[in-house]
Image (cartoon, rainbow, N blue to C red; front, side, top):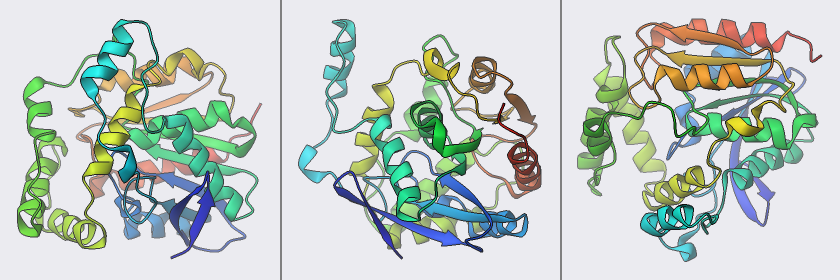
Length: 294
């Protein structure tokens, strides 16, 4: 796969479909490699006339790792906030949004439809207000503004979801399959599909250290809501009613902060992409992409 030289690092990316079609840039979530956007979903997007671009965020997959930065000190990050200071972290969401723009540059794409999920949705929001001239439309899925007043995940969910993961292959796969069930929602959970995806993820590049630094990047911007009023691109916010990580109020928070944003709440969907909701997501994104920027 090709790599984009961006911000003095390399970002691994892949394109799917006809380059003369509408460009759609997909941004993955925390610790997720580009294949979190499944081949099935990408193929459906191409069948709807999109040129799909997916990539590995920095510090994950086959993109540049920040090993020399070490692991972030979250106690110090919290202490810096309590002192009214901006914490020092290896990189920020703004840097990650700039990486995404760099992928477009590598492909000579001036403007694209932008879609991000979870942390990728936060990056997409930052991209939309930091680089508005590059955005044809914006779709934000199961994400958040980082507003501290929003309902927080249940402690027992966080404890299970962020506990240490076994480093050996089979242990990693089984643990991640178990965690996937926790956040899936009420649709039938396909363990075999989840196990296949996690095996592919492990074999391609197992690198848990990057997740901690990505978490630190998410902590620094604080409340993105304060800048979302600047976004003028047609915006669609999609959220699962059963999302246990980013409460449904997080989706509403994004939608109310962006002028003219549409909110689509999907029953049964948690913090994942069940096959049952993919047609709804695709159809809504297609409709949003056809809106004109005022």
